[in-house]
Image (tube, rainbow, N blue to C red; front, side):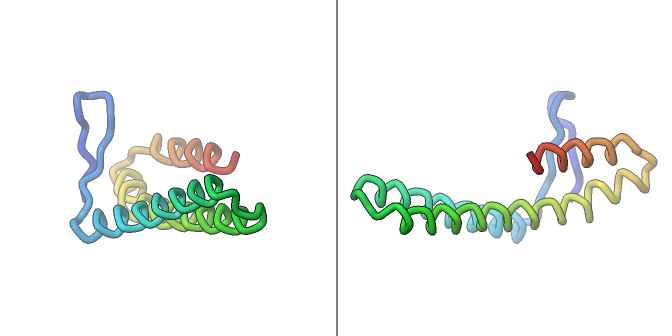
Length: 101
């Protein structure tokens, strides 16, 4: 799970096959839920029914974000702090600020 520099301008992260599959499966489920909401709108579903599905999608994305953030802190952030890269803490703080808008 090492971070790599790609073209000197973007950071990347190598994920295990298990991590990758888990993330993709979660995102596929969210994508399916969003498609379901679109069908509900196209079929003139009752507003509260659509809103309940929107809340479910929001909860699924929040869960995805929490898992990804936890992994990031336990791997990338922890490693960088041990290596003396204090700027990673500032990057994390900036990311959290953006997430909480």
